[in-house]
Length: 465
Image (cartoon, rainbow, N blue to C red; front, side):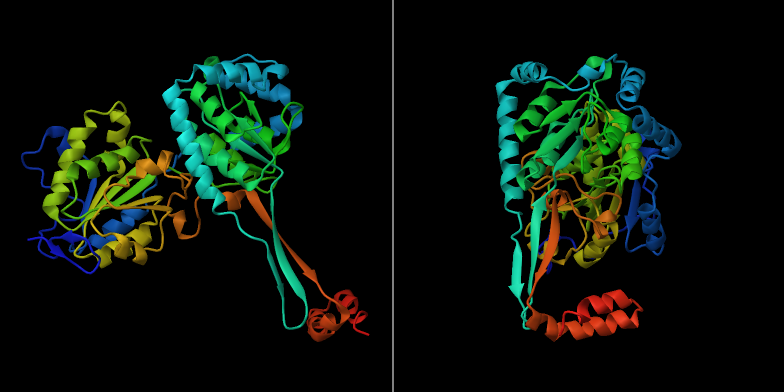
C-alpha cells in the first residue's frame, strides 16, 4: 500500500525487508551482476553506520602523484615562458607551434564558428541567454549606511580585471563548461577573459570556439595542461597573466591550480562528479536509472547513489540500470563507475534520508518524488538541488540557468557553486567627521594600548582633540 508521509513523498513506509549490509541476493542473477561491487545498504541493518562511513570515505580521486611533475612544469613556464609552452605542447599534444600561433586567430575562430550547425548555434544561444539571466539576477547592490555614532560605512563591489578559463580539449570537449564559466565572468563585468584549450594533434572542437565567441571570451590559446595554468598565473610574452583561473581539467590541471593559488585566485579543486537521487515507489524506475547513469558516464570515478524507501523499487531501478547501460556509447565508463562507486540505500523514512544527504553533501541532488518542496526545505548541504520528476540533473548541465560548476567530494558542506560572486570583489569604506570619531575613537585607543601598539593608539588619539 502506498502511503503519504509528512514530507510529501509517497512510498511504502517501514514495511519492506532490507538487504544485509553491502550484499545482494545473488541467486539467479547473471554472472556480471553477481560480481558487481555496487553497494546496497539499509538503515535497518545493525551494521549500517559502518557501511555508510565506508561509503563516505571512498577514495574516488586519482591516486596518481603529480605534484612534483606539475611543480617542474610550472617552474619551467615561469623561467622560459613561451619556449616552455611550445615544448610542452609538442610533447603532450603532438602539435608543433611557434610563438605567434599560440593564440588562435580571429580567422580560424570565424571558420570554426561558421562550421557549427544552425541547431547547435540555437542551443548555445538558448543556454547562454538563460545562464546570463540567472547570473545577472545575482548581481549585488553596493552598501551604504550611517550609524548612530555618525560614521558612514559602506561596501562597494567591483569586477576582477581579468580571468583565465581552462577548457578541456580534443574529444573531451565541453562547450557547456565554456558558457558556465565565461558567461558569469562577463556578466560580473570582467573586461578580459582569456581561454586556454588544448588541441591534441591540432584538433579543436568548433562548438567550443563557438561557445567562447557567444560568451564573450577575449582571447583563446591552443595550450593545455599544467603549462596553461602556469602561463595564465605568471604570464609569458604571448599570454598575459590573469587574476583568477577557473574551469575543469585533469589531475595535472587541478594540481597546477592548487600550486598557483595565492598568486592568483581559483574557483575550486574539482573531483569526480556525483549525484544522489531520492525517489519514492511512485517514481519511474527507468527515469531514475538513466539519471544515475547520466553521472556514471562522466568518469570511472563518478558516483551515483539512490536513496529510497522500498526494496522492490530499488530492485526495479537496479534492473533498469543494467538494461539502460547496454544502450550507452560510454557503457564501459558508466559500468566501471556504477560497479565501483554506485550505491543504493534503503531508508525507513524521509527524515533518515535528509540526514544521510546532509552527510553526503553531494554535488547534485535530485528529489524525484511528488511534492518534494517539504523535503527540500529540510536539506542543508548540496551543491545544486533538482526538484520533481521533470527536473533531471542533466537539464542543469546545459540550459536551466544556474551554474553547473559545483563543489564535489562532500565540500558542499562549506563551499558553493560558481556564481558572479567568484568574479567580483568587495571593498569596504569608512567616512566620518571629528564628532563621530570622538564617539568611537577612545575605545580604539584603549584596545590599541592593550595590544601594545602605540602608534595605532596615537594615530587615533591625536585626532580626538
